[in-house]
Length: 242
Image (cartoon, rainbow, N blue to C red):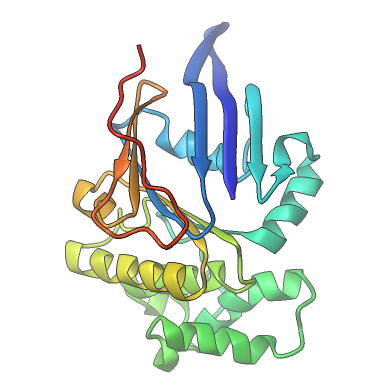
């Protein structure tokens, strides 16, 4: 479902290239739940952005569901994401002037999926435990409730892949655990490939596979504590690039 080949990303700082990711090769099968971990500055969020097509690599290719998204135009990547990818951010990114159900409706309306959109949005919010909050604005919701709205919105177009960048970073441990349980349920029931970036190692262990980054390279790739779905290979034993 996801394949990165020779992925590199550099930025320019003070007139000099600043490498963030170096020689990343990664394969993630369909329906897998993979956590990406590593210290601050290791390149986790940069890698997630490249895999999701939110940014372009300096070198290398990214394939999602067999499509080389690195070869697409910016508009082409945006169209591909709207049909195949969901993204959950740490800071929620809800539109403050829209209610919970209206926020979930946004991606459906952008794609022209008007027929039955209201019912689907309401059903998604019910699935994440917010059936009584449909008409509440973000300012009227707790942090955990806002993140659940963001999660429902990410699943509005039934994405094949869900990327989540520190989705529990602004939440307390109990609330964050509840968010991850919902993501696990959606990964299992909707058969959505889930890629999660987190600093929380206990959370990461709940994944099928844990990929560790260090200084812009893959330093480890090992199984998590949750059993992989049938047909999904476990991560390789820990390895350190030499």
